[in-house]
Length: 373
Image (cartoon, rainbow, N blue to C red; front, side, top):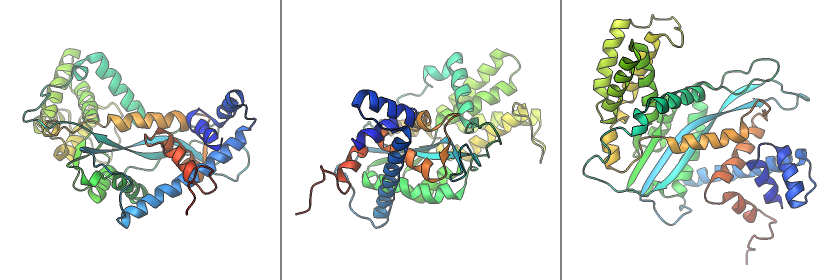
């Protein structure tokens, strides 16, 4: 029954909804507060198990699975949630917006090919309505801080490159990869957006994985720059398609040269001056900087020939699954224990190895746990 309580709390929108569902469907009379306490306990225990796996990787103990994947893919990204200071009485005290780091580890089957299997960009990247909608969604996700309560404004989330993430998150992802024999796979890829801390993790824990810059972020920067440079709509779309095709075909230098020329015409952003978000000088400079910083991770034709992904869509979708449970105007998690606990329960539910059920089966006192002889 405890498994059902925690599963409901991690799956539904709130502890109150979980309590109502358990009352109606399982005949269990339980309060939302008690559901929250049980979920907190389970999340803390799951976090402890997660940390133990990372320690086992450090000690180089045997992996937990027997089969080595044909292709091992690690994708990382971040979501958002709001936290509050516990022990301050009712209400939301000292609210802060936080970034939760999420990794998706996927075992993939794909074939290698002599020639690029898709030398032209996908039709969805050449459809104005779809591209416009995609860019709008990505910009909203990037700018979407945790919601603000009635009262003081929430603090900004940790800045990109915050060493707390690099130091704590990297070993956890590496421990999970070790347990799945990812390091023994013949083909390995690490896919992420251009944030510096992502590539710090890649260099530190996945140095022999192919580093791949998510193409969707490249698309977004190119589209916004083209909108800033072009005069008429037809010209703006033509610029975007040309730059996109260059990058898709592994010729980012051509797009960079065009952007550099556009920057000279428009003028470079003045040093020390904060430009408006839609200032053409800012948009072109940001696109050019993004391509320069990630050019060595943008050999997309070679990645496609190797059967490797060129977007981080798997983890992007996973972030949405986490946000659906932990993010909202009425959701403020106790910092840090409450936030960590609910994230661990949600991760256990979303994982495909049934780890939440396994956790309850293996815990001391479980009626399903095999007793030692």
